[in-house]
Length: 234
Image (cartoon, rainbow, N blue to C red; front, side, top):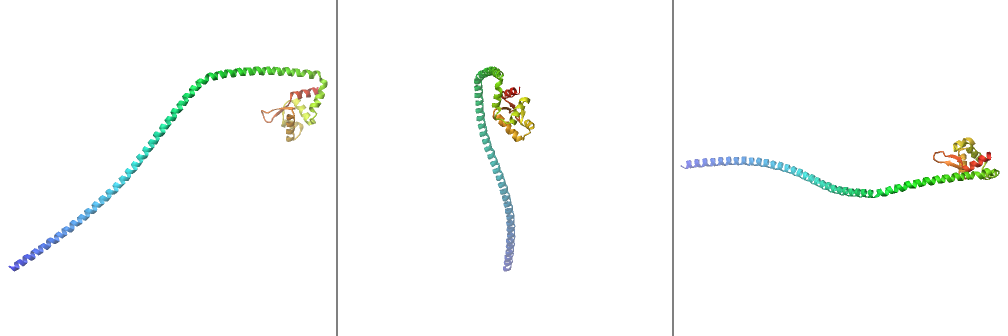
């Protein structure tokens, strides 16, 4: 009886040990499965976190762009308002200018009439001055023709300060008409500087006139000097 109990106890002990070992093996297996599942879940969580972070960054970028666009739209609206105000002000000025123009048109017409009258008066005055000058010129010829004996004295007084070269230049211009300084230089055979000084002196002393519309200037003898020279030659 004792042997049976011992065998039975040994058998139970062996079975218990086997069950414990199998339980331990299953427990380790479950633990490994748990660790693998845990790692998988952690990977999934990390991946989700990365994706969530990327999406958050994209969302922030979009929000920044939207804010910038909104700010630009506000600036554009402000610029549009300012431009509209300037256009309205310009239209007001144009309207005022047109009104002022309509007011000035009668005054301009009146001024134009006055200008036409002034031009006509100026032309009439010019004609009268020309007529007076012609009469004065005819009167100035009379005493000189009747007093030919006095002409040499006048000529001597008029040309006494001049050199022979200067008198010859005046006589040449009287005979041949207006000439430039280079043309006169070729005739009197002096240097360009000497000829220029000579013509300037005769002009400043009142013997010559010069035409300044073209360069080189053309010099001509004044009418009163020309009459003295011609009468002296006659």
